[in-house]
Length: 342
Image (cartoon, rainbow, N blue to C red; front, side, top):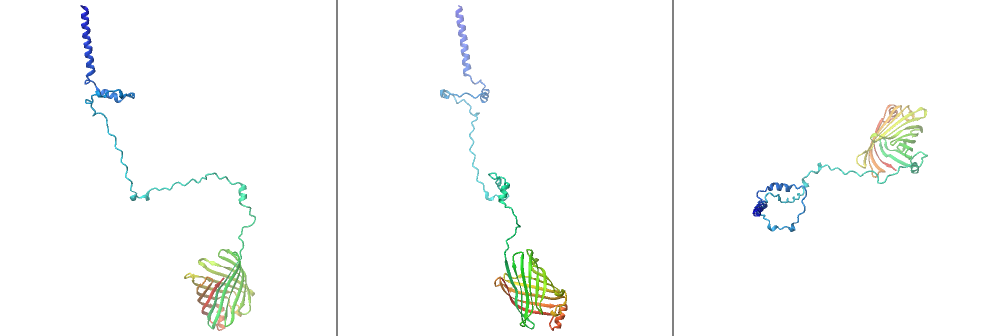
């Protein structure tokens, strides 16, 4: 019976294949999952989207799954906000507080270069010398107008000057004299042209006429006057008179401000002559030296009364002439007067 033998062989082969298939489908314990997980961690290509809507998760056995190896890390907590800085204890002095860069000096719109026509329109040609407009001014100063307690009674004396003109060219008038016992003992008047050679100095040239003593006498005069360093007012004048007579006068005074209105004024005056003049009691050489010290109070700037003391001494032949006339060589006097200018 060959057919029966073939049937039993086929049945045995079918049962064997069925058992092998069941053993392969249900025994997962012998499977190597590590290799399977490594393959899943490094997919060559992104996996296609899985449609979970058609999957039946109710039949899945999650009890045997080991979730400990899964990298389910908790999300990191948000960072805390930084605390506000306390600037009260910071030393800002050492910080490099550089100033912001200055704005660029470049104009927003370019300025065209000036042309010759622009320059000609802006600066007209100058054909005359530049000079200030002449302005006529004047100044009158009565420096000393005083009563004198002289040896033989009261006397009066004066000394003053005035100028008329502008800042550089002026006409100077100077005069001084003394009157005693109702009679003019000495008096002179000078008229000089002054030319400014610096802001503080003038050169003067002109004439001087002695009204007293004796008969009148005229001198040619030239010199300088102005303010020296340390504010000394100085005047030095040389004279050439008749018959070859010569003379030199030097005067310096200073104003020391004790207060704004109380002023001490020292003064010194020296006269020198080249030849003897017996008629006027003048000898050659150093003739007289006079020094004075006056203290004035300026009620206004233009009017100031003063008190003072003066001392005069004659030298050389002039002293001899005075002794011959019965006079002393030296004389000290108290003075009181006013100083006025306008």
